[in-house]
Amino acid sequence: MFIFLNPTPQNQKNHKLNDTKMTVWRLFWTKSTAISSNSKPSQHFSLNPNSTFSQFTSHCRQFSTSFLVTKIPKKFRKKRKKKESPRTKLVQTQPNINPHFENILFRDTHFRFLTKTKEFLSKQSHHVLPLDDAGKLHQQLGFPRGRKVVRSLQRHPSIFEIYRHNDGKMWIGFTDFMEKLLDEEGKVMNEMESDRVSVVRKLLMMSKDKRIALSKIYHNRLLFGIPEDFRDRIRKYEDYFKVVVEEDGKRVIELVKWDPTLAVSALEKEYMVDEDKVKKAFKFPIKHGKALDLDEGDERKLNLLYTLPLVSPYSDGSKLDLWTVEAEKFRVGLIHEFLSLTLEKRAYIHNIVEFKEEFCLTKHTYQMLLKQPRTFYLAGTEMNWSVFLKDAYGEDGVLLNKDPQVLFNEKLYRYADMKVVKPSSDVYET
Image 1: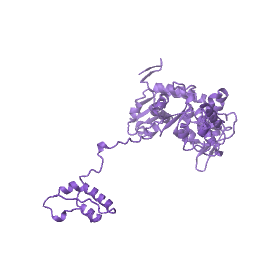
Image 2: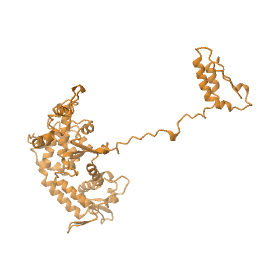
Image 3: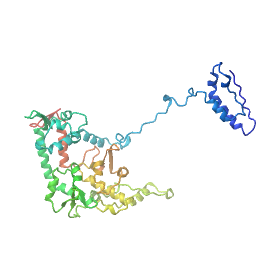
């Protein structure tokens, strides 16, 4: 069957209409030629320039468009790179990654079960716990959900033991060797009690209302080396602290007396020793036009005038306008002082967020710290990052000044990875 086309326009007005008809017709040409020869004459259609476009399109509905390729084949589609999850995306890019700091976080993950189980068992009567109950406490003990707690216990045979009690049930507890280590840790806690009291006083002096919920300090006690029973110990220091019970039953610790000798930050002390080093610690660049045509030296001097003086973390930050440079200087200095009070001069995001209201911090703390790479290093992932004080560590990633509690923790980690311990010769066998 042949169908003849007459595309010649009659006038300027219907020229555009005919072009549209021709385009549509080409789409259905293949299908129309496949019509059987015994079809009725009424099914055939010849284009007429005088026919309306609606008549043409109504006739075209009887033809199928299934033969048309309307989508790009999958193999030719451009593959979109999936956006990496904040749970796995590292904070630092490859050229800026410090493997020493990242390995410290890996060590935290490796000894997570050891740390949490040690704290939990230490609070139990006789330092023991039924094995059946331990299997249900994956969050408190720090082992993966759905896994058997026995597998985690067997990783540290010199620290934990599993035994059968007289009642026929299986129990877990500390080994005799670990009990001796706990006694040693208790002595360290007693020797460092006065220093821990000073840390709590400085935290209260930095807070907005000079008061902090007792539970917040308890949750972060390992960060500062504060003993587990510090809520009972503070009763001995009535000249420094006062515990108030609010209407909702929450216990709050308040500062009794301000001590100006403690209201000196670590940056201020370091400024007296190395002035140039402190001047380079932070950078708050000032915006200026290109018309000034400043060289690198002049720009550095201009930024230094804008950066200094810093704002003391022991000043009242609540009186500062939230988005001013002075307020950002206060928050940066406060984070620096907060980290200097910790045992390892570092803290996780959940440690910092715990004191968000007391320290007048904002939700932009992450971005604020990223702008100060000279002083802070952010390690880990975007969802669970940790901030380090870079000057507190050497080039090899080792803490320069170690607290006695840090030395004990490192000793505990060494023993925890050993299979057999010989106390007589203090030799480890792997």
